[in-house]
Length: 467
Image 1 (cartoon, rainbow, N blue to C red):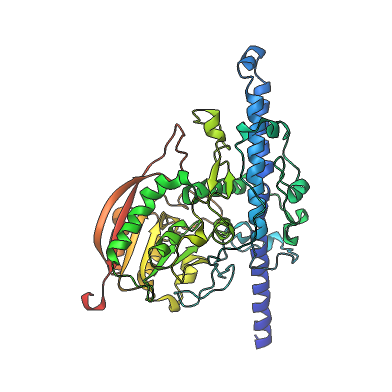
Image 2 (cartoon, rainbow, N blue to C red; image 1 turned 135 degrees about the horizontal axis):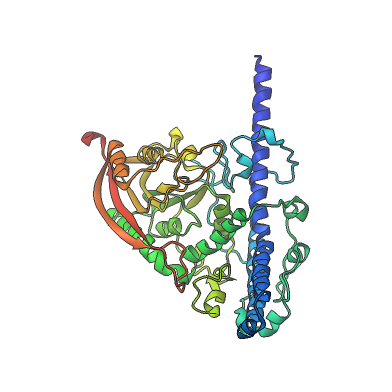
């Protein structure tokens, strides 16, 4: 094969991978944009159930039609936030390019992926970081630009607004104005044109609802209890292990599986050069908005618990608003070098430039996201300096354990005992270990509370002298 043919093949491969990436990102954006339609279908289904009741039963539930209209108002408020968030997203790819991929060309069903490609480390902008120049999106400085949204009233206290909101706005209306509250939205970018929107399965929209719950966990006062359970032990351990931190030469801390970025930011505020790493575009789009574009504490309001009628003590509990962020990220007192890196953990941090770079690695609800947890532990060991520490908190609810597909995705599902044995093999020694009871994105007022008994440990990578 000639060099020209090899170069042509490589170019075609890269173009094809980029086309798959664009299609994947369009699917994720479409999942966000499909949120109001999917939520409206839920309300319609509940309304249809009500019509099937006999009259004497229906008479006992005469308040439900009013509740359904309030739910629609809440959905519209959530949709407004979602669209404003998407408008601020800067895609790392040319979203205007045509994507024409035949079904038999799919590689590993990347077109249906919800993440960054394994073959490319896509990032939202460039910055200098402690990790040797990995491209990242970073916390922006406070902006003087006025925000277009005001405070959101609780729907059940604004009967007139609810009455005026008989149904959700169609897509074109959503692009121009947020219904019912007079908030005017600026023009969207071309890549948010409705003609580019894809029809996506409901499982994709469920991921959007998951993001809304994660906002509560990471960025609302209501999530403080979970953050105290999960983040505070980690932060206290970092403070204990690094008592003499210096602003001139802060210790470098890597946070894989950073989600919406709160833990990475809190670590930065402690005096660490902190870098969060996240694989999911769903998460990265939202974390970028909160970190870079929110302008004040309590600026936004969502209604995270409206998507299920189950286990509610009262309608008011289900319809309650949640304001966020609880702090203004850009004013939180971060340490220079804070960043968020988008990309697959294995792909990014197995690079030789990452070897021995980090003083600490913090994993919170992360290890069980692996296809191969042994590979995760091996890379954590490689990126740590000799004598560096690994702090972990989380369960072992392996994400790929119950996935049945023609591709038969790999999932290495080890017991906690085996995980510890693998860690010892890769040069770690235990310094501290306990179990912490916690929840994850739980509605504090729900009648059902799922709890984890999470493993919490501190391990230290042996120095060469002790190997």
